Amino acid sequence: MQIAKALGCKVTVISRSKAKEDFAKSCGADSFCASSEKGDMEANANSLDILINTVPSYHDYFQYQQLLDKKSRISKQILLGLHEGLVNGVVLSKLTFGRSRITGSGIGGIKVSERAGERAVSDTNCEPLLNY
Image 1 (cartoon, rainbow, N blue to C red):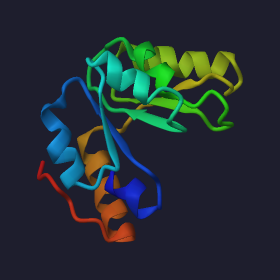
Image 2: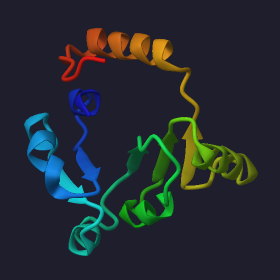
Image 3: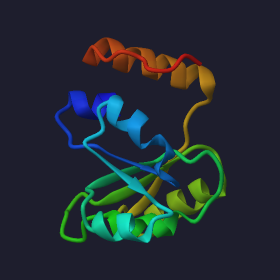
Image 4: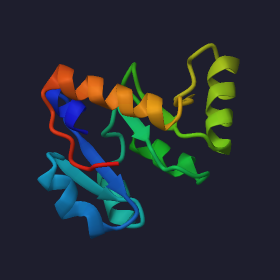
């Protein structure tokens, strides 16, 4: 989130409940959406160009598609993490020659993620919020 903010993006944090809303906003989120709240999902419909889905296990990622801006040329949901949904996202993207609104990115494990995070922090002057 901090990297997106450093790049000038408007950031919306999505979580199942409102429990993390204050934390997300204290970290710089412009807005918050509780996916279990029908009103929040409706209010945020068609509002995102890119949705980076970091849920670490398989889940119904299609529920988030309504949040993507249907008129945006770059509208994508990117599934991160090694789970069943990732395979579906990668295959769907390949079958549609990249035109699918769902895609995946297989991360390279904890060490690679740590190095990428350290590099991103040094390139954007962002402060890490959590220690791993």
